[in-house]
Image (cartoon, rainbow, N blue to C red; front, side, top):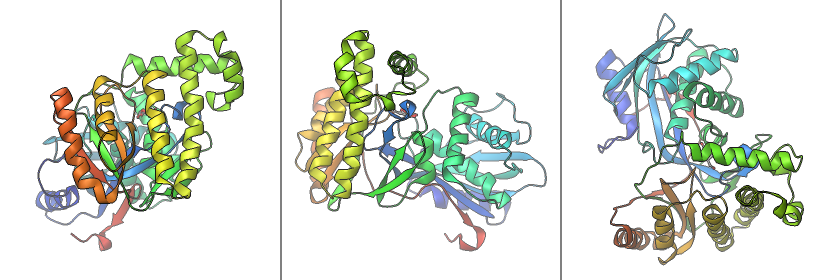
Length: 392
Ligand code: GLA
């Protein structure tokens, strides 16, 4: 959902709705993308993650229909999707429509009402960049259905259903992190999420710092054998040690018995076990306002993802090194699934302007690629804005 024009997606969907339907929307819903500060490839090991909801989001302006049809116009794709929310069927429309159908299906399967609606959608989460544009789309869709039914909104419950949509309808075997943070994000905070219990604890971003997203502009598909292979290796290691998930394996046991595992599997397990510890330490560092300690942990996380989990890439390593070599950087790492996509850096706020310029230059010199760099604050998770509060 990437709007390249200058108009914010919120204004775009409201204006486009008015034009198409001749009246203002009854509801406006929004769900953000995310960037993960630390805790990578830990979510499907029942571990800990520390992402934040970014300021970029998917927006939908909508009104109810009398039947169970959903009809959505995507401004970014210049096309529409329609389906029967009561009986969604795969295929027969644009690929992005499957995220809406899957969400309708998962909500209905869990007994939530899925009434029909029509509307307009737009967003500014770059697609395929590893910033969870698909989770944002799922959560915005869930918010749209929830707005119509006036029911309670339980972020973790809806996040699980959105994950089910992604796993079982779309066929991407992701963990819970992206949907959770899009659902429960808190402005000004990262959120420490226990991916087993779904307990979510907001932790403030260190004062005087900025979060900078470093898009390498390289891409690699997620429905990719490498992600599933990592998951399988992690499950193998957990099974070998007789624990429910790698979250339950202690660093001591692993260290003592590492040699018993096949080499790559051992390295994968070591990443997960050490990354969980780093993530908990990072939340503590943030609570203490210790940007330097948080930055160090991010640096260590990158090394572990690169060397033990082997999900980094030349471009990711290059942008992370460019960041670390620039003034004002506390720490930097790849973020998301890896192999391409984005890095994330923690940067002294006063140095951000120069930092962005320096990283772009160093990365381009090294790779010949022009990066996209976004400074982001942390936003709230998915929300619905009723007609009376709509504004412009
Ligand atoms: C992708 C998945 C998440 C998580 C990350 C890696 O973003 O969607 O569930 O596994 O990769 O941390």
